[in-house]
Length: 209
Figure 1 (spheres, one colour):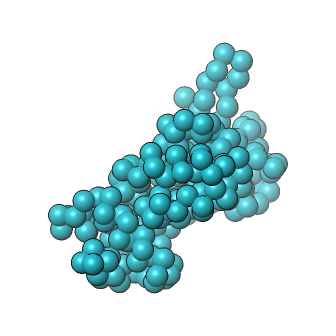
Figure 2 (cartoon, rainbow, N blue to C red):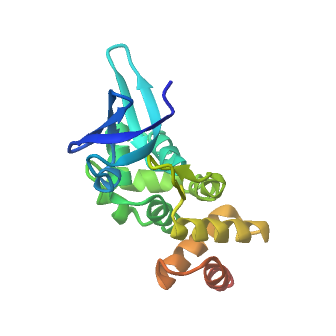
C-alpha cells in the first residue's frame, strides 16, 4: 500500500497530477487546492490514500496528514464519495472546514462542487463531534520534507494556532465541541493573523456569554 510519494511533478490535469518517482509516473487524484500549489518540473511530497478495487488502483494525494484524515472522515457521511470529498477540500482548507462545521455554517460547505444544501447540512451535523479531534490531531503531525529536502510544516500557522487554542480550552475543562465553536467564532472575528493567545482570550469571552 502506497502511503507517500516524493518526486517531480510531471503533469497537472484538471483533477489529477502525474508524479515522476525515479522514472515511474504515478497518476494521483488531488484537490484543486493542492493542484494549484504544484508546478511542473518542481519537487513535491504527497501523503497518499490508496483505494484498491477489482478493476483499478486509485491514488489520492494530500499536502498533509490532517488533510488526508479529513478526506477519510468526510467519506463516512452518507452521500460523500471520494470525488465530493476532494471537492470539499479543494474549496475549504482543513481549518476553514473545521470552522464551518463548528459554526454550523453549512452554506460554506455547500459551495463545494457536487454538494447540495441537504448534503452540506448532513456533513455539518454528522461531523460536529469529530471536527475538534481532527483539528487537535493536526498538532501532532510532523514536518514533511519536500522534494528539495527542505522541511516544511504539515500544518499551516493559522491551523496550528486554532488547534492549540482548542486544545488549551479543552484542557481547562470545556467540552471539545464547545471549545471548537468558541475558537471558530474567535478566528472569524480576529482574522487569520490571530495567534494562539488571542484566540484563547477571545474564545474564553465567547464561552463566558
